[in-house]
Amino acid sequence: MNNSRKEPIRYVKRDSNGKLIPPFPFDPWELTKQTRKLVCRKTKGIVQRKYTHFYKAGVYGGIATAYSVGCNFRCIFCWADWSRDWPELYGHFYSPDEIYSKLRDIMSRKGVKRARISGAEPTLCPDHLCAVLERVNEDSEKFDLFIIETNGVVLANDENLAPRLSKYASRDRRKGTVGYVRLSIRGGLPEKFEEKTGCKKEFVDLPFKAAERLWNAGVSFHVAVVVDPRFTPMKDKEIIYNKLKKIDPLVRRQVEEEYLSPYAHALVRLRAVGRDDVTGKKMTLKERAALKERPSY
Ligand code: SF4
Image 1 (cartoon, rainbow, N blue to C red):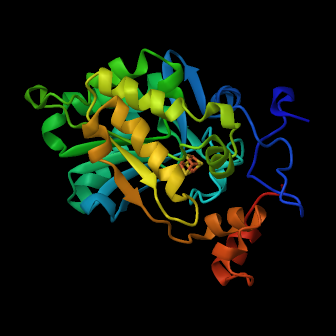
Image 2: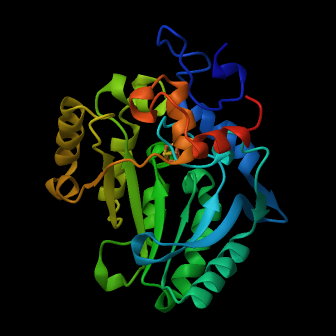
Image 3: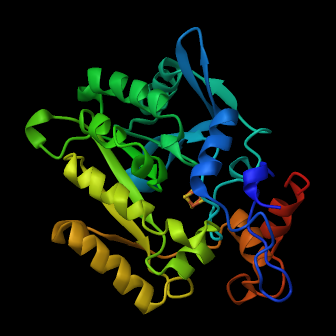
């Protein structure tokens, strides 16, 4: 069975021979459409999106975070909680005004000037995202930075999104925008991309297309690449860097190199694809706890 028949796509599993178990690999655009039906809705003209929680995170020097539900990738090392894989079971719908208020409230209480939409894939509902950014933009003196973390699938498919984001996240400093995009690129070699994301390998170029669109639209952004050699061999890394260099040498130079930490949900996901070279043979307590709270697969 494949995902054209709308089988829910949870997390990647491999059989004892190392073969992907259907519905993997999947089409990320199909998954985008399926997930949107669960996490985006319009009520009385207001575009709401699902989130699970709101908090201050220590990264980026302290940042107010809205944790969104649902993603269109299934990275094997993903640290997001089970709301990524079971978006229908988690979270509540919030309007752009509510998200803005919640983030501002955390910023005031915790004394930070940075905010972000994180968790899973913030661009799944572009109209909701742009409405939040519109409010941030109206109040931009209250922010140092507003970060959008994305895998680029929606940006690659929707030619209007990068130009829309440029209004809130411009590379032109004179415009005084505070928005900023962090684009994750998972693979350069098609097989490695498929292995890491669970997506069909023919979609390997989507994130590069997103980088090109962001660059051409004048959006303020950088690319993050998992260079951890347990997942990205040198050849894969070289291809990623060469493709970025072709967009512009600056895009390549500004790459953020990521190494992975073994968060609880990542451990469960990695073990499901047979990566006990990373997880270790024995389950840790935190991995057991994540497995225990997982909905039935
Ligand atoms: S793109 Fe990010 S949130 Fe989505 S599966 Fe990959 S690591 Fe997780």
